[in-house]
Amino acid sequence: MINKLFYKNFLLASLIIGISLWIYKTMNIYNNAKKIHDEVITIDTHCDIDLKNFTDDYNYSIDTDSQVNIPKINEGGLDVPWLVVYTAQDSLNKNGYEKAYENAINKFEAIHRLINNYSNGQMSLATSSSDVFDIVNSGRKAVMIGVENAYPIAENIDIINEFYERGARYMSLSHNGHNQLSDSNTGESDGFYLHNGLSDLGKKAVIRMNELGMIIDISHPSKESIIETLELSKAPLIASHSSARQLCNHARNLDNELLELIKQNGGVVQTVAFATYLKEENTYDPSKVSVKHLVDHIDYMVSYMGIDHVGISSDFDGGGGVLNWKDASETFNVTHELVKRGYSKEQIKKLWGLNLLRVLDEVEKTSKELRANNLAVQ
Image (cartoon, rainbow, N blue to C red; front, side):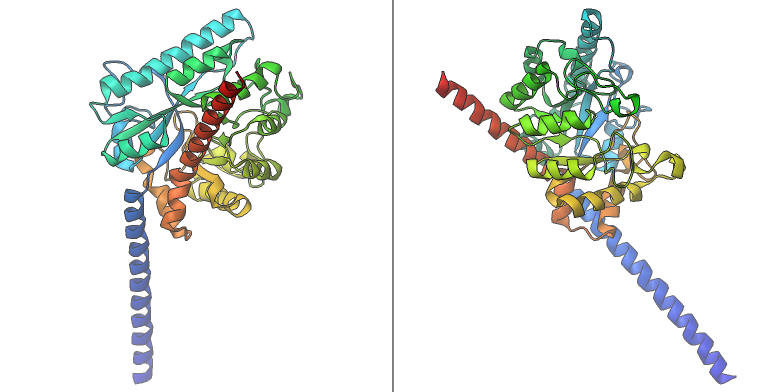
């Protein structure tokens, strides 16, 4: 009887000790993640916008129904939302180009209204890595601007200069559908390509973006277009919101050949929290795709490309959002999962922003060199 009682008490004590150790370890990981999250600069490279959220009466100063707004980014500890000037693909004619340009300008102006009129001094526009550090260190949020789909430039690459002056620091040559510059990833399912890569105008756009210091985004173009861009560009590129095709066979994702070429280029793939790019549709319930699946893709690309070539994006308000990162208020959960997987503070710094800012610096450096060489030739 005494032995049985002793054994029961021993088992109970062991269980209590085990649970206590598990709680201690869990809390230690959580507290470490909170500390890291507070110290690193978090950059989400792809947040779409809707013009209805940029009016005097209804805007990001309040908790709108959008996935990104000031209350949500404050709650989640997101330092740099990269807001996107997105234009859907339409007809390749004057009427289509004019409508697309008007849409793009309206979105540029909306972002500037947010910063200058609605944010009450909580946000500032950043166009360089030094801007990001200065703004974040001052306690404000840095807003950066990207252009998704170069369709609005029509057949005039000088409009790229205008977009740059308005604050854009990356642009993708195409979106879903071929345009005047580049074939799209949609050619894979459609079985049709317009240029079999880049058009002559698209090649000129790549050169112009290099000269200006604007990052080229390769998330939406076709594989052949991406390869041609990588061959032509003299600066590193990014995929602003893409994941690994090895883990999810979707045309928007990047296969191992492209991952290797991006690594050789010095570029960065910003892993995207978009359910259909994280797990294949016929094998999952979209409501169950989570931050764990996002970090699975990060893990894979870090193992394949190295820690210096991987980043993080949400595609919020453009279809993105997964369990535990449904909007910007839950941004900490990504850091928490990374810490649970064993990533160090220095590695998490790179994933959340330093890799991306390194590309921006190198693109700016290339721009200065190209302009200096052009002046020397002249």
